[in-house]
Length: 425
Image (tube, rainbow, N blue to C red; front, side, top):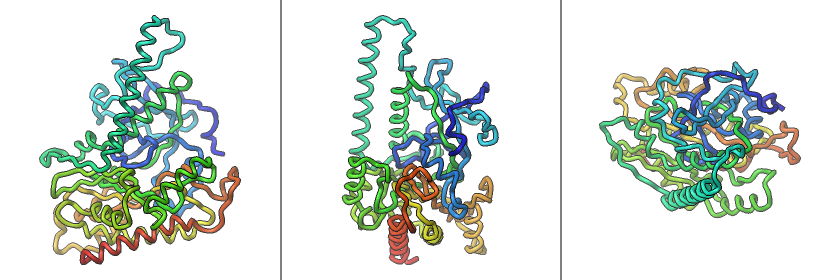
């Protein structure tokens, strides 16, 4: 087991990193936070952490780069606003890049997690009436939060008009409903436990959207089975029902979330997982078409690179013995910003090669951005329920490849190919 699983031991230091909301999260229920421009962090799940630490070399191209573990805790600023701050674990100096956050907005302009610290320490001597009123207010806020979540569930597809003259990427911060839903839920969970615990381990991962001006993101839940081997009977039954009632059972993939900027209409479109579960196979195909459509025309130049990467990923997974990626997602990402047309004398093949190189982790900080904006990323994420024979503590050991996931990949390849052929690619 990794040394990072030892008792929490934080390295004393005067300055941590203020964590901000990650505005491009479109699916999943685990909160993802922005550590810095190129790095995200999310709550550490031992099984997922083990996956990243034992990841086969040939899969690294198709997963976010793993950057280490940090300790996250609540702190108050000078205005008693509750913030989440990340600190390096003791002895992990090399894994955490504490950077200058001077380019971020001042603390008093950041999106607040809450106005005040809401849990009451037992040592505080407060009037009983005040405590009673405080608890009543907390209960009302909790109900209001649940009502907002219900509204989000009903508003499964949302469109927002953006100011074309303004900075589209900055406007995204104020619109993504699923991102804010996950943040509120995570904060609520941590607040409820704050009396007993104020330190959490988070893993650091590469921010896959950092090199895109206006990221368009599609989150696909992969495979014909979603529950892990350790799931309770109730949990397994619930996940089986979701698969049976969605495209997961038929084609091994379903939409879990989508964020698209349609430059032609100046609109941002968000689709959540509740809508994704209701889609038929034809509806799934139409959603995929919509993802690659900018409001005026289909982004055909993206389809070839996507198909190439999906085929490469499929070949890699066919060589992975005993892995099962239950409840894992696949992200497709491209830039929705309109770029100048490629010069007539440009070599399309050279541009594609450069795009491929910039997506590879060996290319470093992604300094190159192709003029034709044909760069598209395909990455696997979310491994909290992944299993493999290398995980010695697992009682169930699977043989062979993950047929359900590979089936979903092949279905995705077939559908993208259909879209390409029908559009005259």
